[in-house]
Image 1 (cartoon, rainbow, N blue to C red):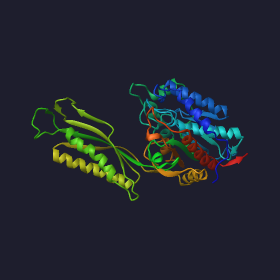
Image 2: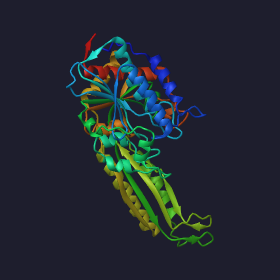
Image 3: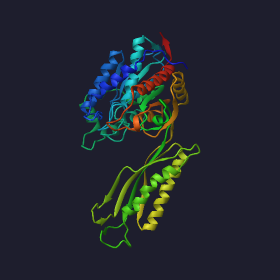
Image 4: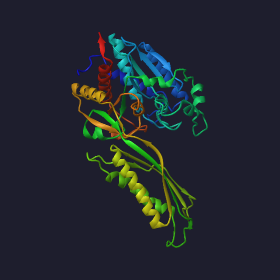
Length: 419
């Protein structure tokens, strides 16, 4: 596959990123455009102006997903979609999500500037609530579109401050009338994102071709013991926290030691810890924590789960406590489309970029899309792997390289027919 000769502008892409970053910009240089807030509405309005300026037709569905369409020579063909999200974490950066949306916009701008036509229609999608920062769970817009969640359950979700998703969507003026599940008819889906890790930067690669999303299993762990005065003898105590501590430590040990045939280790995280009664001079009677296990090999993930539960049983017996490890959520290994993967590889090679295949250990809209639609992701590096942080940083060259590879794969899929 040869690279496209469209007038793609890395400088214009960067200028657009900096302009969008002003919407909800923070004092530390990041962005705070949490979903369904007034600044989210402002960012959406700016994207609408930019899209309509190059002839795109906007449709908004009942979940607030923004879908811009550029007609193809054959409107009956399933469209090729490019997308990501504009919403951010409360202390988010300038690039997470928004890079993928504005890279898609730059492709549309280049096509418009060249007066070019594709055989299949092209879509640009801004998904609602990818981050899940204000309303949980994340990736609601794409999940609702792909049937992972029902429309009713999404609209009924509440935030920590009691706001209701559906009411906020109406309040900011961004609830449309289109059926979100119509997006299951998309022919192909492509997404550009910052890596949110250090593999590309450490390896000196400019582009990552994402081959699959890791399998994930989440658990909730409750350790029940007995409260004891801090001055009581250590012998005979049933301290829930002291039983929980070695199990928490075991999460990292299990992840590092569970290695696939290809040499890939697992990933393990304890993200929430809570103890009761949480008093300075009382040994806790209850400890609660969450466990997030991930692996690129489902068999290895299953072994990690078994190891966690076996370690819990051993600790419960040796320390005289009860430990319950409860399954909370699972996301299967999600492969991306081989043909799209190869198109992205070909584009990166044709442009002379240093690239590598890479998995994503992080959820993205593309992961839900891949359940119904042939999908690929392209990663660009980010400094220090830093993301969900106001200091999140990439170079204009990295952004441009990712956008060019995305464009090559998307245009090859939609088939450029003119000029």
